[in-house]
Image (cartoon, rainbow, N blue to C red; front, side, top):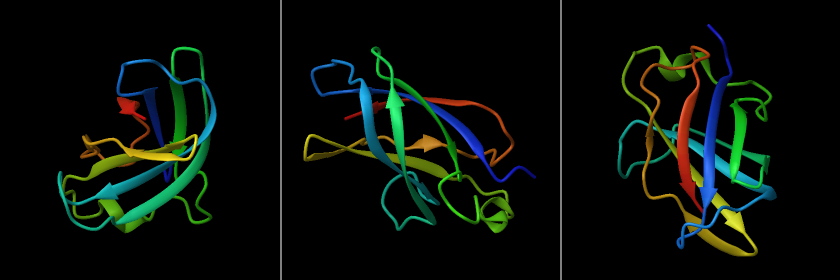
Length: 113
């Protein structure tokens, strides 16, 4: 089973403007769609293009990659994305389904910065 998951997103501010450049995003997997504590957390430096698009490999910044037992019970998992831009912390309110687990498929998302 692959220990990395490819995830692509688009970073936009509350006015709908895309953010480009390099910045940190924190990714967290949850058992619940809302609330609860993260089962896994990782922060990566991402490079967004002029349209705010970025792609990461979840698990790449963790020495142990994604834990094997994270998806062992085949329960749904939810991915939360948090960004920090110009000293202002804003959180993406929606979590994204990660129910299939680390199977190498490409997930897409819009992340509001």
